[in-house]
Amino acid sequence: MKEIILLKSGEIALKGLNRGSFEDALIRNAKRRLGSLGRWKITKSQSTLYCEPQEDGLDLDEAVERLSKVFGFAALTRAAVVEKSWDAIRAAAIEYLADALPYVNTFKVNARRSDKQFPMNSPEICRELGGALLAAYPHLKVDVNEPEMVVWVEVREKAAYIHARQLPGAGGLPVGTSGKAMLLVSGGIDSPVAGYMMAKRGVEVSAVHFFSPPYTSERAKRKVITLLEKMCAYTGRIKLYVAPFTEIQEQIKEHCPEELFTIVMRRYMMKIAQRIAAQNDCTALITGESLAQVASQTIGAIACTDAVCEMPVLRPVIGMDKEEIVQIARKIDTFETSILPYEDCCTVFTPRHPRTKPKLKFVQYAEEALDEEGLISRSLAGVEEITIQP
Ligand code: ATP
Ligand code: MG
Image (cartoon, rainbow, N blue to C red; front, side):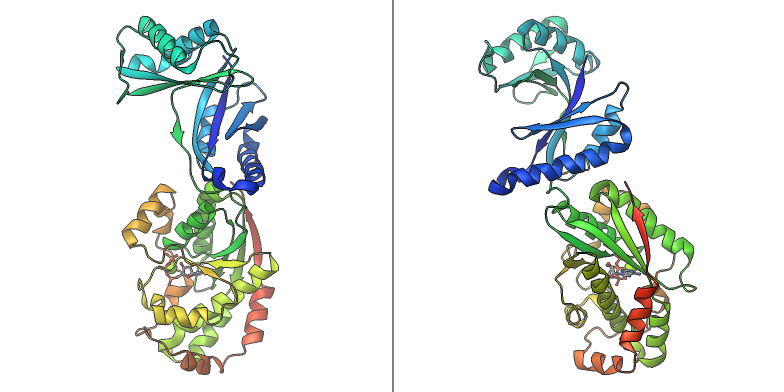
């Protein structure tokens, strides 16, 4: 029996005139995510995408798994493709659901008929198919209120489709439809979650990571790459820029008051990140800051950090508790990697008593001791580019 994957688009239905380009982005993203699994044909009709295998033996389970992480879909399901005749629909439903109906006790049939030429209307299809399934599987009972399984029959333009295992999609908007932003990614729990959340709103994510050899190890850098490899199941391809930060941190340590280390360092991160962002068509930065989680994330400290930013800084986890962030990190499978105990450049130079209410003018005064342009341009010159593929 021929099987395909049906995907229902979600919120993009609301986008009026932009709808066409949103759907094109959805198809493009779905195609990319399936590319390495073989040849597929993806077409759209009404608010449904049809994903048809073009060669034998393609792994539909893996395809469903991958597509369930593509933003922009409300629901998806494997479905049997059936000729549009009542006999074919009845026979196919009995056969196609043979690995499912024996394991439930109650069911109901839902029908949708967009092809009004089909001689039976939706209530008739429901009634007749319900009866046929009861006859074929006598242990079953119909329960219209809380069935264990809903059997769907959709009679559409080209064929009828039967399915019974609809799964929730990833929701959100297709990646790429909300522009492009640069994620400051550490090896911690929060920044991968922040990247995931913005991708869910349609942002194409690039990433910058600051590393400070020999204070931070190759393993710490490898950990960031692993985090992005997990994230990109949702975000799609990510360009990672690894920027050297050792000289900057050493200079800050040598020339600035200890209680201002962190804030000066964070301002340098932002300055460099936004230069790399601008060179790569990103129009915003993303961080994993959560209000008051640490000294550098008080409103006062954030104000000092933001003072160097010329582009918007998106902070999607700013109002979330650690527990809520951890929940998402577990869901996207980054948590176990994030808690591996490798050093981050932030932790290596943590002052004993960081300022929680830094005054901007003192911070700026402290920074005058540094050769800002030289430090930034030497870091930019050492940037390494790595492409992370799903
Ligand atoms: P995370 O869990 O994301 O590491 P955190 O709670 O440890 O966050 P900080 O270490 O203060 O908080 O970092 C705040 C934000 O600054 C991070 O979420 C990230 O966006 C950015 N950041 C921190 N360290 C780095 C780094 N080495 N490279 C790039 N960005 C960083
Ligand atoms: Mg951190």
